[in-house]
Amino acid sequence: MNGSVRVGHVVGVPLRMHWSVPLLVGLFAYGLGHQGLPVWTPGRSDSVYALAGVIGAALLMGSLLLHETAHAATALRNKISVQDVTLWALGGTTRMGRPQSAAAAFAVAVSGPLTSLVIGGVALGAGFGLHQLSGWAVPSVVLAWLGWANLFLGVFNLLPAVPLDGGRVVQAVLWWRTGDRDRADLAASRGGQIMGLLLVAAGWISVLRGAPGGLWIVFIGLFVMVVAGAERRRAALHTALRGIRVADAMSSPVVTGADWLTVRRFIDEVVVRSRHSALPLLDFEGRPSGIVQVSRLASVPGPSRETVRVREAATPLSQCAVAAPDDLLSEALERISLRTGARLLVVDAGQLVGIVTGKDISRLMQRTTLRGEQTG
Image (cartoon, rainbow, N blue to C red; front, side, top):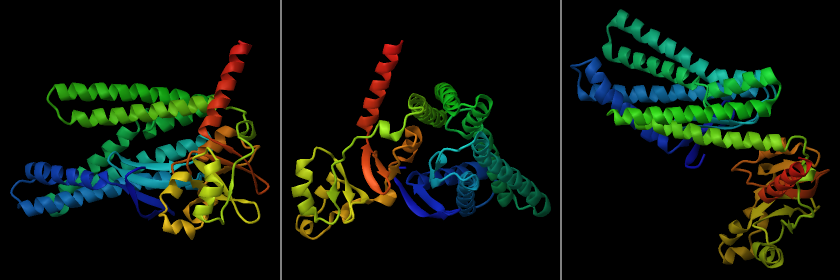
């Protein structure tokens, strides 16, 4: 996610934090310490309220992290690749590959809400128990607040709206009932768009009735609508590409360059003769070693271009999206991400045989559409 930084690892995968997290912690800490606790436990000092608010907000972010960690751990147990876990203003996201079975998809989807519900129940029980045994009002209220927040998080995430976990549960159930993953994804994403629209409407009604917090519901609804729309387009694309192999879409031959050339020689001998914004690289033995963006070469300072090798400014093959000619195109496209770039390198027996770009997909879709019109 743009605007996030890597802060560590969780269950062996990178953990990232969005710039909005400190802001979110501050808002929760202020709400709890300056609005909630003074009403629920009056008579304490401002410093006690402030410290309790910060601790409560930190505990809530920790529970959000456990929610996402449950998703990541369950995915790894079901042999699903996990790219990273990111905390941000709406809680968190776990980027992972597509499950290979409806059972795995269901397990991953429910693991997060179940974790939140368990945390909520434990925190709520601990809060009431602590109050009964010790009478410590402030810690008890903080735990109770944390419990109710997690119970709300768990229930809210079970709403049947992609990308919420409840929407993923709907996807998994429809996939299990119909046996058609793409059809299930399409139906669930449509439901997500409808639910997002309802959230936006409910939020605006709250605002018009004098509740500023309705703006937060509007924001969540818009987010749900946008992501559900993107997933609906992706599901439609998967349906259109069903049965099509990577070889059917790739461009070949491919304009390449030697990775041992200096940036200056590469620009003079390869870039100026090419119309492409990114070029695959080959090593001494003619095997693909990565891909370089022309814009990245342009950012290399003039004097350094005489000594820096082009491979030093390139994205290595290990970070590129790679597929074999006989791979299903719909599955191969799942390997493309912001990290890999919007290109798919096609490698066969260690040799680069083609490349798939957005333009290649567009041409393939146009041909598919034309064939369908002729057949109709």
